[in-house]
Length: 288
Ligand code: ADP
Ligand code: MG
Image (cartoon, rainbow, N blue to C red):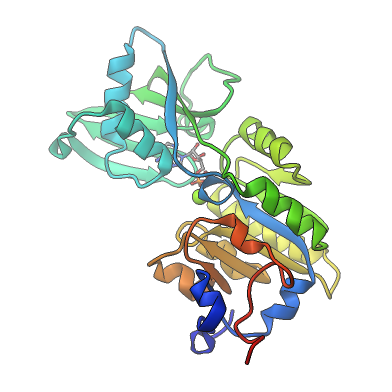
C-alpha cells in the first residue's frame, strides 16, 4: 500500500468526505475491472432489527432473547446490537463470564453458569448442535443453551438507498464485474445480489476467506486490470490491504482504515463512489 506521507486528503475530495492516498492508484481506478463490495454496513445500512423469534425444546421467546442479549453484551457486531435492542432491558454484565467472540460464527459466554452460544449455521456445525432448522430465510442467530438448541432469532437489514444507483453508475463507467463478498448466508446474499443486479457473490465467508477471494481475483485478471474492494475499515482491514485499491467506508476515526486503505470515505454514502472520471472519486491532484 501507499505510505501515509502521501496522504492527499486536502482540497476538494477531503471536503467531499473522501481521503485519497498518493496518486498512482488514480490510473488504477480508471482501469478497474472488478469492484467487490462487502455486504454489511457497505451495501446495507447495518442497522439490523429483530423481526421474528422461533423457539424449540420448551424455551420461551423471552428466555432465548434474554440469553442471547446477555451473551452478546460485549459484541460490536450489528447482529449483537439488534438483539440487545430487541431485549431492551438493562444488562447486568457481572452475570456474563468467559465471553468469547468466534469470528464468522458468533459468540459464546457463560451466564450464571449456563453456557450460551449465539450464531449462524456454521456455529451449530462447529459444536455439533442437533437442530431442525434447515432453511430459514434471512439473517439468523441461533441460540444454544447448555448444548441444547433453544431456537433462533431472525434479523433483517436494509439495502442502502444509494446502492442501486451507484452500481448502475459504476457499470456505466466501464467496470466489468461487480460482486459482493459476505459472511452472511447464501439466501440473504442471493436476495441482495438480485436486488442490486450484481454479477455474482461469495457468501458464508470467514474473514480470511475474503482475503483469499480477492487474491484469487487478482490472479485471474489481465495485467492492466485492477481489482477494487470496498468494505468497512475495521473488520475488513486485511482485505483492503490485498486489493489493488482498497476503499474503506464509514471510516471516521478508524486508524486501521486510514492505514490500510487507499481511499477512505468518511461517512456511509456509497454515492461518493460515483462521478465523472475515476469511479467518481474526486481527485485532489487534478487541480494542482
Ligand atoms: P459480514 O460483515 O459479511 O456479515 P462477519 O464476518 O462480520 O461478516 O459475520 C459473518 C457471520 O457470522 C454473520 O453473518 C453472522 O451470521 C455470524 N456472526 C458474527 N458475529 C456474530 C455475533 N456477534 N452474533 C451472532 N452472529 C454473528
Ligand atoms: Mg462486516
